[in-house]
Length: 315
Image (cartoon, rainbow, N blue to C red):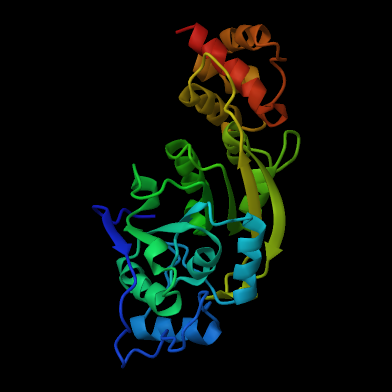
């Protein structure tokens, strides 16, 4: 995901009727709840914008309203929640979130999409438009958010940056208590994997620092436009207190990175660079109560913390 330059904030309040000539997303009849997008309205919006989705930004837009309702239901949102959405795109999920949550803040990097989204919200969710905030920025570059601090992260995340975005936002926003994200199926497996499984790795261990995660569903390619070549998975997480430790998060994550850098290596070899030599790594591992001949994929987050404490103790 490339940087979109300086962050531009739009706080959108209810406005009057949109231009008479704009028929692509206009809803004339009064409504109490948002009118969700369907395939025809997604196509109309895309045609209006002359939109050409890019693989670079992982742009695949949800066209199925039932999928949106399912995501919102699984997220367990209520009027007390302030939701953060990343990559709202044409607004498919945004509209569903506005129906359930007290406030929605969306971060969109694409200026073309960001320019249209407030009008879509005003047209299709006029009674909720004053509870919507749009930030035009790269989510990986965001350092603060305006308005109510989010209690939940719910998003259809771009495949190519999903893990970095999740980790960045969990670190940045301690107010996020839980979330539900839609990611590539393979990524979903990695996020929720436990020690000893073949998919357990850096994403699994780092997410475990912040939260407990589980896979709660699958999503077929046919509900997206353009249709991706892979299935998607729904991952739900609940934040828990980070481990009590004398090591910093950076030290713990550095140990995780080193342990998985060469998966087939024993820890005493994989962590030689961290401790200065294989012999020193062995001594540190033994001091942490771990077998120097074990491998990273067998360790829990508690084990990684114990190793990082040895790093901290050695200065």
